[in-house]
Image (cartoon, rainbow, N blue to C red; front, side):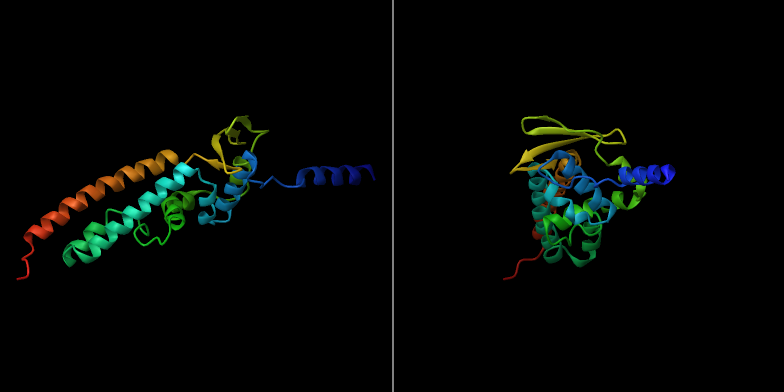
Length: 192
């Protein structure tokens, strides 16, 4: 009887109540993102990104829409394929910033080995360290995730540097596009 009781107690303490998914806590936000990754719902990550990250993604999305439109309507047909090849698959056709963010992280997310190891590794280890509107969450894998408190919810800043790099590249492509459009227009016979 003692063995059965000990096994039941061990099982109950292992199962527990689950991890917090309350995004008004830093740990809950980390666990919500972990669960979105594990279930391959990449678009569910977007609402948990910092305001700065979402703003940069929205700017990238707008520039890509403008670039795609210009390539589709002004570039000679023989140059369209090459012009579109400068972008990750799906980036130009993303209908929303949220869909664009999912597209941008898709390749890396698909390479993750999903399962209990990743689930455990992206689980908060202990309580978050909070200082005013900033927090850090240490994960079981030893990573530190930084978050900002925005509108009563904690938002991750982890994607700010890579999204900033994407924005710089898209802005550079936009400058090249403008130059190319001028060149195309100067070589196009004007209608009289």
